[in-house]
Image (tube, rainbow, N blue to C red; front, side):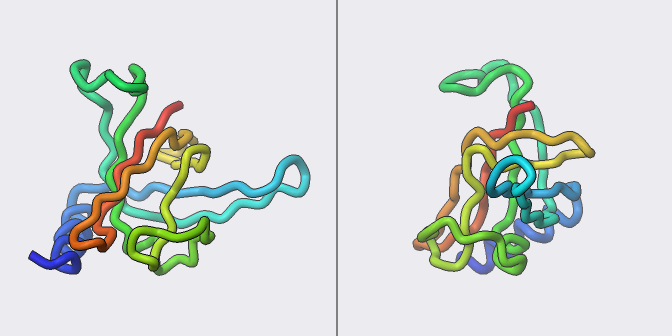
Length: 125
């Protein structure tokens, strides 16, 4: 299965079973702070007790996103990305889930043949 096929399958799954979330990057501080938002579909779930290892705390959640919305949104460039076409969320970015702002603790890109096909996030808050 090609990378494009994997992305298409993920997009269909997120459309059917996911929820809308807002990915937010805040630049600057104080009165000069600006934010860039992109609405994405995601599956968000809490971690099971046996998954609470290696910096994952009780109350953290995993969010699975497709790179599709990020690519098409003009998400701020943070440097080279695995495929050169989408910048990844990073620690400190925000994910708003059901109106609750959560902080991204880690982002793990999932690649197939060097192409970004999925993003797994660890969020807290």
